[in-house]
Length: 471
Image (cartoon, rainbow, N blue to C red):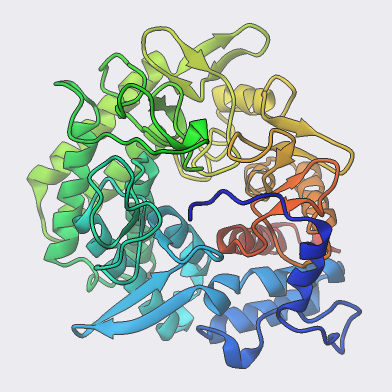
């Protein structure tokens, strides 16, 4: 299956509480919904210490309860760690889909990186994610999601593309190759450990560079195309699977968005920004470890080319918002001004290190995105926030609300985002993919580990920077 799920009714919201246990915690009125200790996939002493510290320190007991449920959810429920050929190997599912997305698996373990120094088993687990991602990229750099067993085939085996055993889904998304670099770079910076960065990793970086260059499409369509027999228009690709036309100007084509929906205009701006950052991170690593100065030089040159093209083609004059970043462009003068609740998004550019929060162009874009000028900004009886076409047009993504909070430059906005998330978890104690703007008990994906973990990241950031907002 893919990420599409029908809206879950309130009965499922109730059952989501019950599935992990119905006993009430002694210290509060909130039910125990976290996976029981004996059933957890991985235990981190450092993560448990953080949970204990936050819960005992903040005054908002409901947020503390939600943090205890959400922050460790990736470790509790989605990781499968082992040693393969003497090296750590970690397979990470998204939650309710038994497949490993390169994007999600990177984002799911990201908030644990600062805790590795005090927890060597946790460091080994994350090294295993990097090793597994390397093998996935070498199997197929155009695929977005993979199975644990390299011989498995699944529901999408009949997609009209070059499907291989071991691949769950083959939707080309720029960010699928950026997220593993982001994870590897920060792991290296935080630990100094170079063990995951062997010849296979080096080969995967060179393949990433090759794929990005192919998808600049300066000389024809390139090797990738994709179509699917489906009733969902955003699940397949026009133009015989190559996407809508765009002018080859140095930007990288992304046939799908991080939401796994097809792009309208192939130059997805936030993903190109992400590629720019990731290529420079890869170059720094290549210069330091295998000392492959030639490939590092190519990475930097491509990053510079993308940056220049973004400056020329991604900035548009919105009739009401003025000068802003477009979400998608084709370099022929056509553009789409919106944003998506998934990440990378325009809203997330400072979070990904692509621009500064104070940048005036980002701030004008942000103001547009968080208003009715954005066709996928939802204003409802229960909450307001960014959604996207992946689910109903009247649904808000908690990922979008979290990202608004993570990129806010004032405490009032942070406080409002926390309040929105607190009142829309539908009594489950967990985040979801999306919820109806008027009725949070109508939600998709009761088990979505990335949303849970990044919520924990948001609470922890607030705890360190503005603990008074959690009281």
